Amino acid sequence: MDITKKISNLFLLMLLMLLLTLTAACSNKKSVEAYFCHQEDCGGKLGDEIRKANENVYFMSYTLTNGRVASELIIKSNEGVEVKGIIESMNINGKGSKYELLRFQGIDVKKDNSSGLMHHKVFIIDKKLVVTGSFNPTEAADEKNDDNMVIIRDEFIAEEYLKEFNRLYFSGT
Image (cartoon, rainbow, N blue to C red; front, side):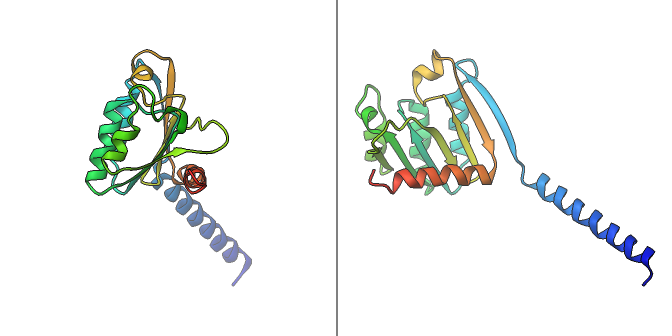
């Protein structure tokens, strides 16, 4: 095979690899959406994402008093979706806390017992999507506060958040 044909074949192989890489990147459907609460109904958007869950919802939340979010978690759990959560221990008995309701409904939710303040606001859905930001799932955050919420559709990011969830969940919480 002469050198020209080898270069041509190499070029075609590189072009094919580039096309395959671009196709794979496009098929991952990675995206990021940003919302600003109270103007954009963050609780409703979070509830919408939970409603789409097919396999699992894992959450770490500083507090959880939003009734719509709690209802969606309960519904998904009753549909057979695995729902597990961690809530900051100092907030589990606070006004409007949904901690006991979630536990009563059979959801595996634990109080955080780590030495520091567990200040996360994270929902990991189907190990593919992360909802995070300054938004606490509370009525006040939805109606009064200036918070933000980011929805990240990326399996690799979800995997990193899941590592943190597992670290807290299995560390004696």
